[in-house]
Image 1: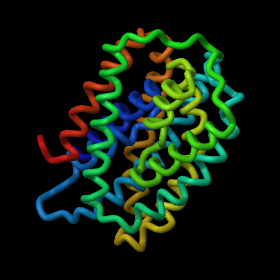
Image 2: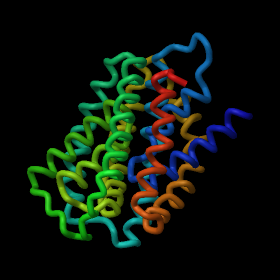
Image 3: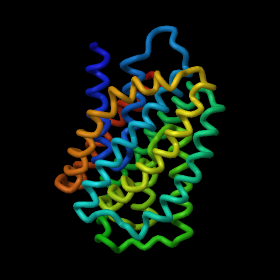
Image 4: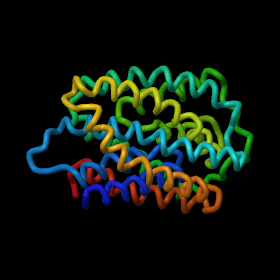
Length: 263
């Protein structure tokens, strides 16, 4: 019962992070599941089980957030179709690739990726660049295909919704504002996660786990993740941009350290 309560709390926190940052929540869910559920002698391949559960839960995190961002008028609907098609296509490659990589290698890779994301956030805070005005960023169609493809590949490979890459790429390369990047990312990754989650769950038997095991984790994570996502998405439009970046960075530094077994 204690584990169930803790996983429910984890779902809420991951949902709030996903809604706030447009990243889906896996960056907190995956290290959180390892922290709460790993026991001495557990197989490193359990990371694949956690990935499947996180991908499914990402759907429940990103969809409510996308609705909230849409109501706030922050979604760049001109960018969504190309990003969506490219990311949904390539996430299939990412998931299939993840299935042939050892769980501990994927875990370490995710820790490194989260650490790099934290460095990026700190750099953005101290660089003090002005956030682009709403509607000003106009990435080319080719660029959007590259952004979406990279998002799908990283999302499928590491068990992420993909927004952790899409948000900064839209900001830096596409010159899209932070709130618009977060909102647009949420609108893309819930469908991308749906494709990735379906494939990962369908192939989980070959990795030594059952669909029922995935379902049990999702049943604990998803309900509170939805609530957290709605709250986080609302806070995106109320909090200062610097506060958003710093809050996300602080939480994720701890998550990366846990994944790397440094704490």
